[in-house]
Length: 230
Image (cartoon, rainbow, N blue to C red; front, top):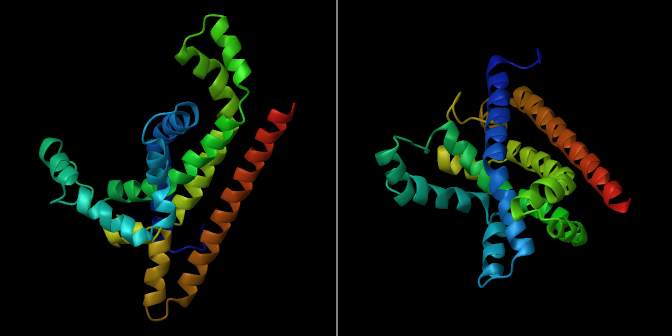
């Protein structure tokens, strides 16, 4: 994209990399949790479901603050990670990926869960009668059926991660080349004298990326519906 400046290209590359890392890291957990909430009944299930979706209703700044308390240098998990593994999340790309993953995780779980609820349980029962174990049934029957939903959820979560602002700036700040993603670069441009043109370019790019993600997600959702209607 030759019409972007080097700093804008850096922000774009950083946003894409962080969003990809956040989705890749959270996808297995989202599938497992969606399966648990859909197929199992246990005490505390409603509370777990509410906690999973809590980032959707909390202000992103609150989520970033909670991450700072938990994974900061003096937080219980942050101190443990630094002590045993030398991992620091505050003010790093890894921390930005964690913040975006937490904010987009509910979207991913919700999409996969809707796909699971539409799977014909009779197909899984038939595989069970043929001797397939739980892992085999999931890998050979359930996962292929929900794959379009998983992909749609991943694309939606990726798009949401690209646009995350509040949790990222609260948890990892706004460091050029390290944590300054597209939304943070846009915010910086708006705060800078004469930054209107840069802000307009970044806003246009963000809109294009978000629209593309939604179109791909909707296409996958339609594909999924057509498969279930057959």
